[in-house]
Length: 462
Ligand code: NAD
Image 1 (cartoon, rainbow, N blue to C red):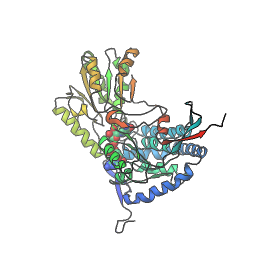
Image 2: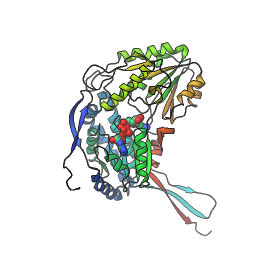
Image 3: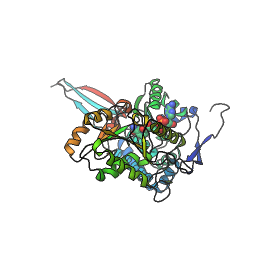
Image 4: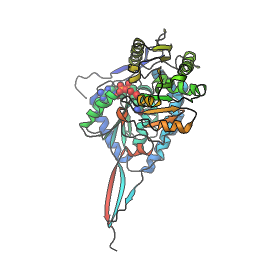
């Protein structure tokens, strides 16, 4: 412990539905990480030894999470803002991911290349892994880190966002009933806690989800120790509507693909490209839904859309929308904060947005959707591919073969037809360009937490 450092520091946690502090979390000092990482290293020896015991522990962990939904979900809503039903879904997804990875094991392989040698590829865990995650899906994104890392035989130090530390602390205490001590440790605090964790010499893999600028800082920090780096970064997903799109049939799905979790989804629809001949109809269908969606506190029954999660994000959404309006966009729905306590922003549909406006070129990460007309499909695909991002994308139309052909031209990690942002636990998840480095999800997520170890042994003399 550093001499003179204040003891028992904490920081405030704010309920975005009221804008008021409702609890606090420990503000851990970066120097505390030395002991935490040392304990994670000590716990690694036992944890990596027995795959069967790990699987059993992860299955028990999944059961414990599922059983704790009634405590976890309301706390998640309180600190993050999302409707309670979505918090329950997040808890269920967390349990499902633990169950999925509990059953995965790496496959040894032999190399047959004609040499008189038996060569076997085995897989070894890396050591203590650092996970740093954002505030939009605190539990789900934490589990996307710890489920594969622990299944692979690593231990983990997990740092949630200071906006949403509480549900993660509760989750880790629930998991502690099923996992050996120090296999998974949560640390909470303000910067430079994350920066110090990313560059800690005892960490062998830094897996980060968050914004591009922070991801770059994390990668620079990890360069000091040459730890492996996985980055899941921002997105600016486009939905390209084709001329034969059945607007009323897809409008609800498209709307929620953009506005779920108040638009704070890395792979939300963040731009819509509609054929000029269908433009008015598309704008109207989305605006009509934006006007009738029930906005309120996530804990209120009936709420469909909660507040923006924190004051900084609300300010970003507000200024990006104001900029678009100043650039000549038209707010067909919303366009402003709601006049009530808390961080509420009216669900907003923007028409006639100039293509250079930041709400189109950058990630808005809020309840604001620009809709742009196009006359030439190739130009629309170029525009969809024309940002620095490449996380997901979708194509919407009646002729599925045609839609699939267009989807195949999107430069991103996952493309959907008549859907967006539905992911399988078994699929690889990877962004291209500035949306990420490395592959998470499915067996790829497991192997991303392992290193190959190759043994060559002479074959017996013939
Ligand atoms: P952020 O980059 O501000 O913060 C992410 C995490 O990094 C937080 O825990 C934060 O405390 C920590 N952090 C901040 N500064 C740090 C530093 N210098 N070193 C180490 N850690 C540091 O992102 P955010 O605002 O919390 O989250 C929103 C972003 O996350 C959006 O860009 C969104 O698209 C992205 N995101 C991506 C995915 C994906 O899977 N690709 C998923 C969800 C969110």
